[in-house]
Image 1 (cartoon, rainbow, N blue to C red):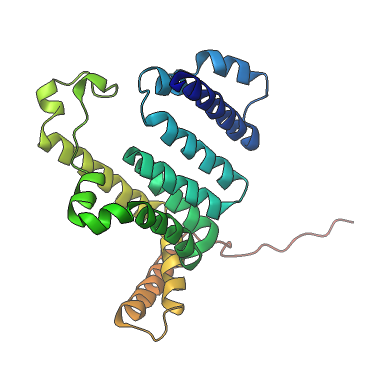
Image 2: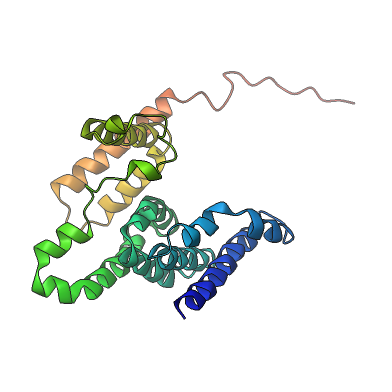
Length: 242
């Protein structure tokens, strides 16, 4: 009976993946047949990890379909359900946060984020009432170590280095440094607009909102000063043709 349930879940997951590709119009429909035969990632979820991974990924794919259909509230609800099944779905959270900020802005994204947080509180309420510290420390334990036997990207490293805390901290530092680099060099426009919007919508104004507004204006003026000239220094008069 359990195998039949997972077989149905497998078919549902495939359909959800196909719908994602269909909505984005990236591949023609006949490619779906080859995906059924060659999609190792989707198959491995059910072949190698037949426990809570299939349920979590099915909910995640459902949430992505809802996002593509502009059903953001329901999508956030399904995403939070996927996180409640398995914590590794949180790896998709930065991308979702970026999409919410891009789509709705800072203030508009807050209700969507509240949906995700509220659902986590409701689902964990029985455990929070009984042992809140134990539930939060074990359910969202970010210090868990990935087993070396399952790694793909870092197989060339010795196991001792792979499991060493210094290696983990180095990866985290590199990731945060790249995020900061992209934020300063590529994403700063979105950050500046978001901070300006936040500053103007903070009432009554605070020291932080006032300082952030002046800092953003200074960044805008600096970018205008350093940017190349938009117009030539001298405009040549056009010759009339007879």
